[in-house]
Image 1: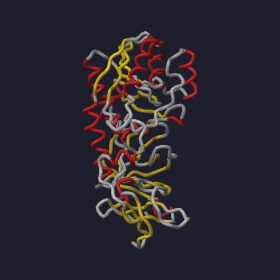
Image 2 (image 1 turned 45 degrees about the horizontal axis):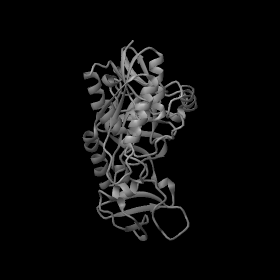
Image 3 (image 1 turned 45 degrees about the vertical axis):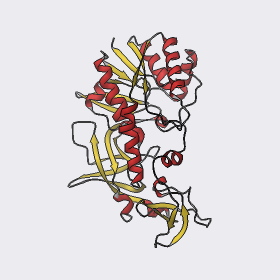
Image 4 (image 1 turned 180 degrees about the horizontal axis):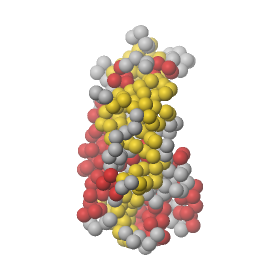
Length: 351
């Protein structure tokens, strides 16, 4: 069997992933990845590390840790703040996977003699015709291929996903059967390991936020907001317009510190969007007809891909999209890759 380094986060998913690998006969080492946490957030990493150590002890596996806090601060946090400052809503979980777990952690594990790393993600690794791919999890409600669409062949060749065939309920039950100390531990709701903090409070520590004008579609001031960098396209809360009708953010301008809102949700939906940093998991070209997921938890929608002078995805039905977020592409359950929505989605008219 193989030597596998499992990223033990201190949560139930990674704990059960490690248990399954042990039961399959692999030589398993649990690894706690220490990442950067701001000093103004209640420290959670020590508690999480202790939980990870307890899991390793119960399973009887070796335990190690790696400090990637500097890499995380630079590749994830600094990038995220830069995007928010420019009126773009980033996807830190995608960055965290690409730049930390399947970047420095994978490289370090292989250098230490591991053949594979493993995580508690809900996805299935697929191999066919000499290539690796990602399949949506059996439990579609927990599927995390959306956050893993930037992985490449080399990463997948050295990664195992033991939870891909399980439901969350089955994972909880298995943890209880094994008497793992994290069996009833709530899932983390924080910002990709940073902690349980409201995004506005977090950004306020790094970006100068001042109240600004809320504009209607004609450019008339109809209310006030807390700071343009705090908002995302489609949002309908957190600003004041003085009337009871729901308003949706259609445009964010951090330079003028204004947001533009509409009462017609059709104004914020797009028939097509330009993608940049487009990534294909396979070495083969992306198909022209496929399915697209324009945001996490969104339903898959039939779409057409245009790969001419620019990459553009045309949805069969207009969709709510946010610049900086990912549009992930699929062929059935097979995740093909994806790209980030261009900032032009703020500016273009309804397509």
